[in-house]
Length: 452
Image (cartoon, rainbow, N blue to C red; front, side, top):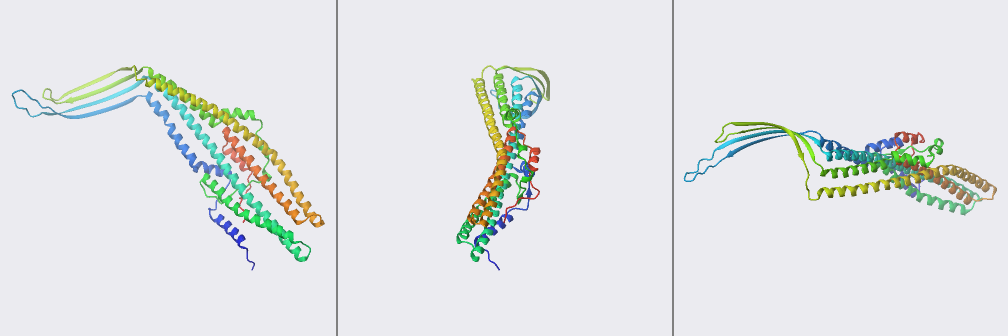
């Protein structure tokens, strides 16, 4: 029975622990996105905040609608009568009742009108922030998913490289035993193999970290993820075209820009509301009042009165409060305006960066395809050179290492291009189920699992 070396046993044990640490659950990109919308904590926080912000409209509207109030008062009065030269009489006790109902309908309250406009713009801003957070969820999901795939690709490529070196080590050992090989080939292969085994431990830990990041985003334990199928990938499909139409579209649909625009409009309404504190207000009032009292002079007296009319309130002086609120509202409006333009500049810069990243990724995709073909041809040529005696096994190891590096750079370039495409769509506000379904078409049917 062959006994495995201790480092090999540790690697196998680590792989088994990785497989047992999470429940058996395989996800793809679209499912990960939908799970994140249900479970992502940050998104749920913004959802709750938006629901609270939406109540600003009915609260502001209530200041323009009728209000009714009713009061009921019950008292027991004691009176003490003192006369000069006479003893104090026993205090009489008698009850009193008072019931009142009042209905108030605002007729002219300009401040309440502007406050309602401000509340509506604030709700628009809160809803835009929720949409922005939904787009952020899409970016987080895609980024975590692609990082998980890259970590597993690295481990699989390293595993393939390790198995290839193990085969060459075995061949070099047999050749040395047969008298046709050299000790240098064996030592070099073992050195490379030991290096790969050390790297493999770090990659296993990297898989744990990236998988944990994805699990946090989607709120679900994950055992495997669907990988990219290169046979289904045509990078030109993700070509964004020209940048100017995208910039115009971002001005119309970007959640970030729309949110800051709503804040700017709300600040303008706040200025109008503050200035309207100088203006009079007019209300229509209807009231009903009933009072009943027993006292030494009148017994069982009940008085009922009905009143209706208008009430005019004219502000005269408030100690400078109104002017201070106007200055405060003007300053807030200036801040919101500057933030709006800053958001536009930032969004346009990020859009251009991701636009160029996609263009560069498409060009790199085709370049890496050619580089990979060239690297594979170099491996074949060196293998033939070994048979012809013009190359050594060390030469083969070097070109094979270069080929694996090309494959790794190719994979990383693909994920960076797709992540940039997701970020570009999120900036415009168009990253949704439909776009994730497009990405899902690139995935293979079988899940990606790290090589043991």
